Length: 367
Image (tube, rainbow, N blue to C red; front, side, top):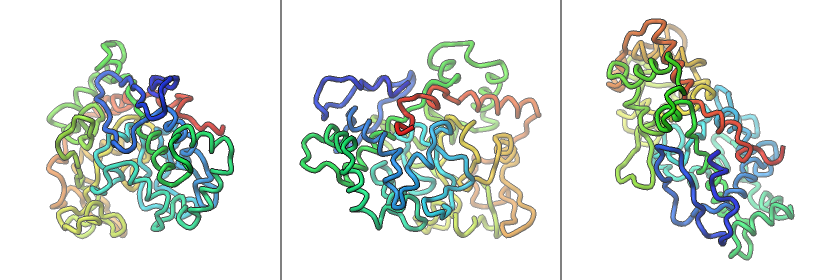
């Protein structure tokens, strides 16, 4: 229970940064100097994260698309906003989001949670929470609630009027930053010294995962199972985007026009189809998979990488991703027996942190 370890009962002033006891093997979070963590701010952020009043029509909260039992994703193929508009991409899980080098699937510019939050709150293409046209009204909704006002005042005691969008965003960012998952069976085995935490099949799967034949760990390595990870001591650029051969609609590596990945930001043809390698923590519960939710099961995902790219035989997006000239050299393909494939799935399931998925301190306080 990482949240329980976050000194909620500290007696110091609100601006005092609470001590976080990190899981074994985890480095210190990178926290913006202008938004230090405090227990009061994190608790306010928890309430705001689950508050439907933050959406224009009061039908959705952040938690509507980021459900705790699903590692803070939503189980949908693609996200659906408060007005029913569909997002072109699958909702990201938030396990260890505070360690992400970049936020969202394919934007190298968004490196801080505070900046990323502007998109679901105020973005219009597509509409998510749809707060843009209701900015003032939403703040009134919050300020007129005595309990919520008291939480703002506790979190920002030096502010005459703390109920602002800047403070709202800082609080939500603080809550999401401490969504730390690090007590899976793998963690118990690898970091905590519990040799019995993994089954024989899971240990075989672990060996496959870290083998040079499969090369999974080159994209999904490190403590967070993503090379696109940073922490307080990081001194290099950890942005990491790869084309995995999921599509090849024109024989030249093209992806569907509404989902071209990093290319949408850079306009560099070499960036076509490049997406961030997400963390695999809690991957058992974060399906469907890929940036567009186009794969249902972990077995399907493994077979895709085993082939070295996806073959779509007919339809609008027909093409052989294995033949894409833009595909990463890390997706070279390999061969597995049925037993090896099952072992690899077993290992991925051992990255599930049940404490994280059920911790009441991370849950919806309105329920």
